Length: 117
Image (tube, rainbow, N blue to C red; front, side):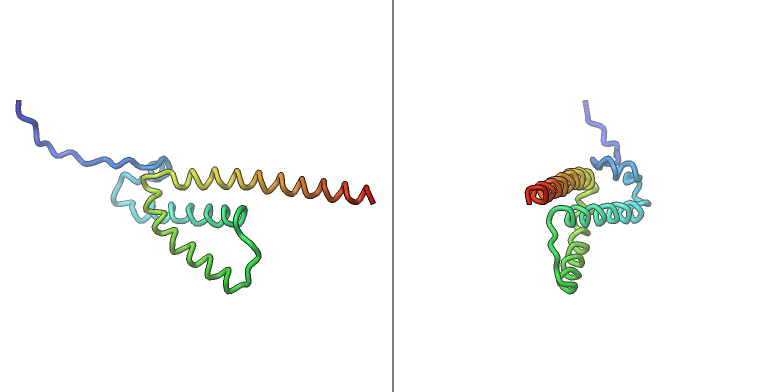
């Protein structure tokens, strides 16, 4: 039996958020890309500030954030098929909880030192 040569549109495996935003439709590519880029930037800046940033001079901070925004263009293309945004969201939650626990620990240490004096 011969194989049929029906043309079927190729389906790409999209991430859940890209699928939710309508990434299957080629006409909405710019909208979906823009929204994914916005989410990636917000979450990348949040994760960077929660876990990795130090107090930098203004010019160095500008350079870091400009390079981050430029690099996020490539990460956004990956976010169409990989769960990049979902991973950044989980990382933001974990680092937020860590930062909260660190503040509580430092506050309790300071209170113990003040009562010991």
